[in-house]
Image 1 (cartoon, rainbow, N blue to C red):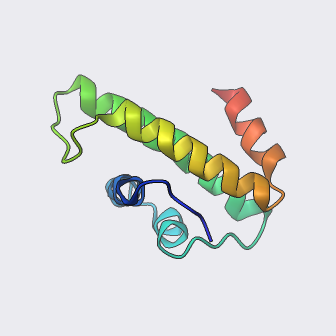
Image 2: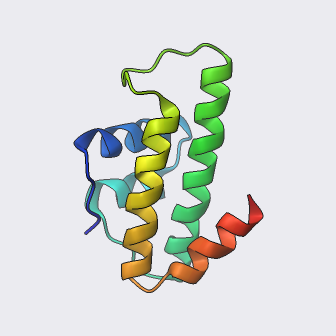
Length: 101
């Protein structure tokens, strides 16, 4: 199961999974389980889509419920998600997606 340093990380990520209409990522965020490489790759893509959406929201003046701002929560989630994927043996999938950014 994924471990978050702050409970707000999960709330923030769930907010963007819902906003992006990404049911698979929402399920992962809620239960912390990745069953295969395909799901790991999906979560990697979701993370970067979330980052892009949060930047767009920030540029459009969208006020979020988290005072620290998108950059702060994106950084925390990057650490949590990448550590979880690495622990499950999906470090290569994470690195491949990072390289595309």
